[in-house]
Image 1 (cartoon, helix red, strand yellow):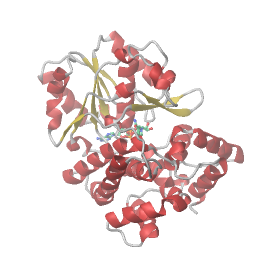
Image 2 (tube, protein in one colour):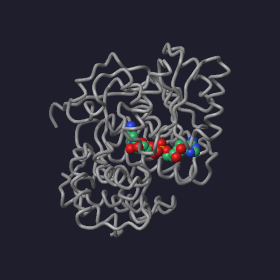
Image 3 (tube, protein in one colour):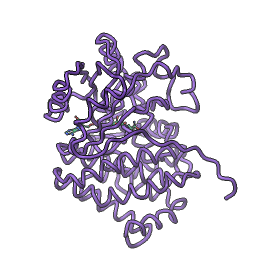
Length: 389
Ligand code: NAD
């Protein structure tokens, strides 16, 4: 290789560790936020983890508003409603608190609240984001309660365009949270299904970034160690949700995945996005179903890389050994082998399959797949995920 050319972006301040949620008032003060909007989802809003966090704000005498009308896989109407609440309440910053859905929506509310252009103008296509007026973004404090998407250290928000049922990635460099509070204890209440799904999402990010073509040795290094952390810690966190060391390592792996995937993602995500928007499946679980099929599909281009990764992770058997490890991890976490395990009474005709393949090949993540994802390839991957072969 001669004269490698690349662009590297690294995240923001992360206050990491058990108990650090207590530093929320100081983080708000550091960013001159006096009246934050606390954005979370309706499921979390009923859990003690939200009560105890809001109590920290109350004890510090900080006024705040709460917005929790956030669907898993958030939609445009959630954003419109959130912006209205933000503006009515005279808020000056956002606390985005939750999994990827609440984090993304909180980030998008902060980004759009004072924006004159529609959110779709900032879709992650080429350099569309350069049209943004960066001045209008209000500060964001991100507090993850799952360990998967890594949205807390990312510059993107994913939202479903309701009219076309497509998931759109909205991107702007300024959407990066000002501070992240990564407190592993906040994830300890996650039920096993969510622990497994979000953890497999972190694994998909680390793995696809590492396999994506292009010169980015830092992302590669982060991706490799992220894979190792997930393989060692996800089964522990799944078995015992109160294991705070496993939870902490998963929280790191999630942030590492999102840092690494600036290099690119691939067909796991390109296939998972249309399924998520058409069937409302959990994003990480859907990634997990596709993972071994996409590894096999890309074998020719990634075999040597995966052999090195397997050796680093202490897995025998090179490429085949690594794929076998992924399959056994899925079994251990009760991840279904096919999409039928995620969608009840799933019945796809040829037209629906064609639609999914068409959506997959234009997904922005398709460009990162080590082998060009054609319509024929996408149909093949879909068939594997439907039949388990
Ligand atoms: P999620 O945010 O949709 O949450 C899933 C469920 O877990 C919800 O019901 C929520 O209430 C519950 N939950 C969250 N934290 C909990 C806790 N501590 N205890 C108990 N329950 C808890 O799931 P997710 O996987 O974190 O996020 C998925 C979303 O993130 C999708 O919309 C996906 O497209 C998006 N995403 C974004 C990025 C990005 O870079 N911005 C990357 C990947 C995925």
